[in-house]
Length: 255
Image (cartoon, rainbow, N blue to C red; front, side, top):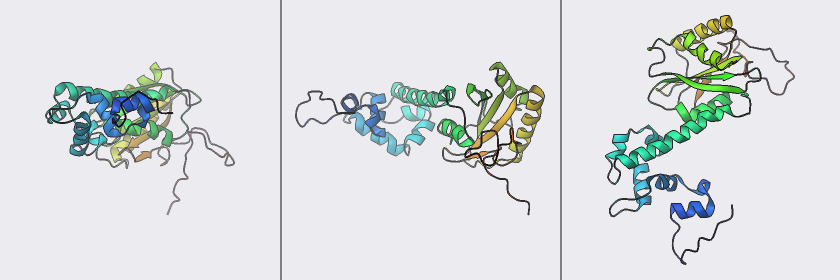
């Protein structure tokens, strides 16, 4: 995108708002985007100085996204209005990511599921479980959060998961949940839950395509890839890409 001449006096620096108008929002750095949300600085500090201070104090955007409104509001130069404006922007970004699951591209792999959900629930302090309802071509028909805070402790029943898929008229579903510990390795509870969902989905006639466990926003495990979910449709070995619903990696050989 070519830079737009805004007619600023020679030598005057472009602030985030002017730079966004001249070059596009995508050209801005993290501190500049944060400055757009905050709007104004504080006494004796510009909005850019305030933005950089927040990024330092919260160890970057990930820390800011996890902060509560009062923790942000207590910072010098903030206040509750700015804190809520900032968190509102973060939440809009999260919602865009998971609503992108309604786009026309079919889910092609567990990696594609992770690409959509890693930024949303990876590294979160609370455990969340989501269900993506898909049609026969793995096009996403709907995406809903079905549990928050202790997926296993809250007694999540397979029928609550299946209800979401059935309400969307789905042929299959992908279950996604996170581990706040950051370790995506499946626990025994995860394995048991996957088997229970699998058994219930067979009865209901809805295929459990995968159960993806997300640790951090850079780490995940797929119960399909690990072999805890059987292949939905065996794929010929000569295909360059195996359809999602078949194992993406060979199972380890028995010792």
